[in-house]
Length: 114
Image (cartoon, rainbow, N blue to C red; front, side):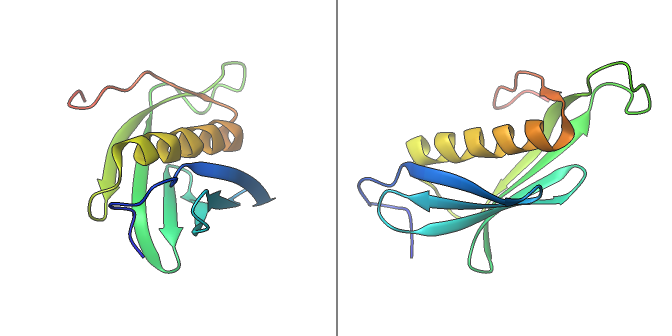
């Protein structure tokens, strides 16, 4: 299956299976898995194929329990081309899950800036 050239590929719903694993259903019936792989990596997969691999970098000390952790996107790897609107929705899902998982916030990220 591919995302290219398909209509109605937006995210229909996302459900939590556990704190690190989520099911994502697209409007066209495709199902994806969103998983927190480790403390700084979130993957979006279709079966065993990784569609998005997002790596985060801490911008604040993770040892200070009095401060909410702050992260930035360090790297986004894509397999092939995703529909730009779908990719935006999928990245929003990744960011939402990561913020929930870490109880942190994500610094504004703009493509091309590091």
